[in-house]
Image (cartoon, rainbow, N blue to C red):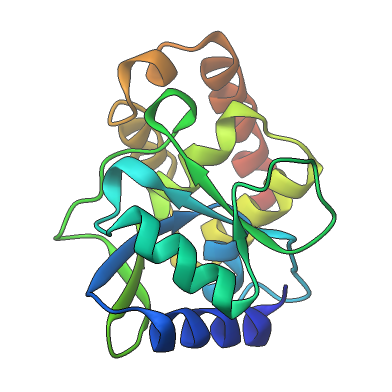
Length: 180
């Protein structure tokens, strides 16, 4: 999905909803909606615990729009990943800093502050993650101290994770290189 396709899906979901709903998304879909060039994705990651919806009704609306939620099989079809608290390497959204990415008649799509979005990528920090992070750091003029502070807002299991801490150090080193 590129930006236009994501917006088409969100618009279609909005049309099929019979209740107000708020999604917090992160991952590639958030970066795409923040205008990262030449970026696409097969899925849209939704932070389940931070979203406000009637789940069954939302899944039905998504299905009518052409997107399955958490398909049973690994799929190469576009879909929505509903991420539970156990897998959610993402700080709780702050109303003062969250970003509205899209709004329809009933559906409102938000993401967390830019530095929190960057930190969510530290659990893996592969080449695609580095590219996403580099884009957002440049676009939002993010400083290292803001990113370090954002790690402390992660859920406890992730802020103390060895990979997150090691990748934070890697990111801080990369940020120095990007500025030179």
